[in-house]
Length: 125
Image (cartoon, rainbow, N blue to C red; front, side, top):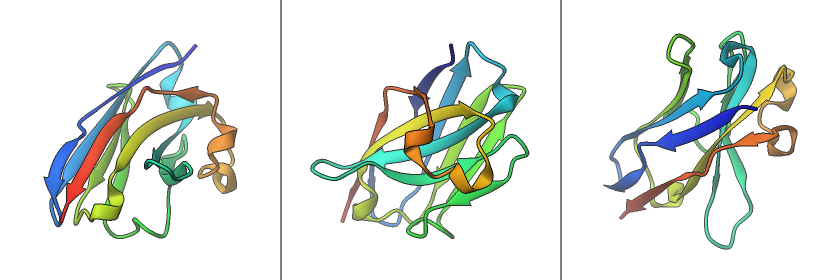
């Protein structure tokens, strides 16, 4: 059973940056597809970025060019580098993991069975 723990959230002004981390344990990390998802109050959960076992990333259009997803297999850790943050990026950010997702499924939250508890990101204008 994979366990995921997010960290790195916080409050920042618009235009600022944050780096989220997701520490994974309990599974063969490098074999898992990993993703970041977010949910704002009153809104549905949406995909942010994901990365497969070959380190191929996928991004939601809303964050392309601003966010960068990466993974360190030696540390069993997933990262999300967020730059040029906007108020609309404010949300609870969740890390998710699933084995062997095909690339066209990486941004579909319903395909992930392992989730962290989330870390809050608040961007003020």
